[in-house]
Structures are given as structure tokens and as C-alpha cells.
Image (cartoon, rainbow, N blue to C red; front, side, top):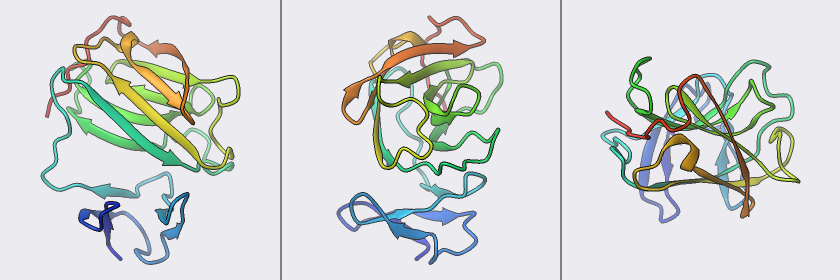
Length: 171
């Protein structure tokens, strides 16, 4: 249907951008999953602002990225906060960095951390991968941690702002 539900069966958000809100449901790692097109498909959580300010947060999800991911497209799994080119650190995104080998990326509007392990780097065609991004309270970009399939990942800072810029997500 046109509504995504959490593991307990409670409505979570409305599907948006899907050409077919029935055909986009596919077998997942556990139960059903959504097949995002990498362009405009998303689940909109009405009224949810995400965790704001400098509070600690963890973003966790499973991804099965297509091996034929469109070149130059940055698939974003989670996103909230200010969309402002000068509000550095004010946006929080979890995506695959198309500029750096489709690694897991925590992006904060002005910079972010790319994550890889000895066995996981380019996540396209890798099958189901469990991803976790841990942002400690009062974190700077370089304090953010990543895990791929439960393994601590090596973080590499990539961005235009100093790696010591604070993560301070705003609405």
C-alpha cells in the first residue's frame, strides 16, 4: 500500500514519488522492503523533525544497493534538518557517496564522514548490508562513527568545511 509501517505494524509514513505504490514492495532482509528508484522515491514522516541540536543520535538501516546504481546519483536513505548552503552542520543525511566509490556517508551540510571496512567499501551489489551511524552528543564531523554489518568502519572526512565543524541539526 501507500503507507510504510514500523516493525510493530504502526503507520510510519506515506510513500512519495513511487510510480506504483504496490509494486515497490519487494522481499527484504526481514519481511518486506521498499525498492527505491534512486531518484525521487521517499517515505515522508509528516510532523517528524528528527533529532535536533547537538543531541546524540544513531541512524540504523539495512540497504541492498543495486549494482547498476545510476552514475552520479547520490542515494539518500535518511535526511532531515536545514537545507541551507551556509548553515554548516545543520543538516543530517545518511547516503551513499557517489563521488567516493558509493561508500556509506554521514553528511552534515558542508562535510561528512565516509565509511568502509576491509570487506565493505562500495555498497553497490554487495547484497544486504546493515549500516549504523553513531553521532555522539556535541559531536564534530570527525567524531561520527560508522558500522557496516556490525564491524567498526574506518571513517574518512570529505568536505569543504573544517572536520572540527559541530553537528548542530536545525529545522
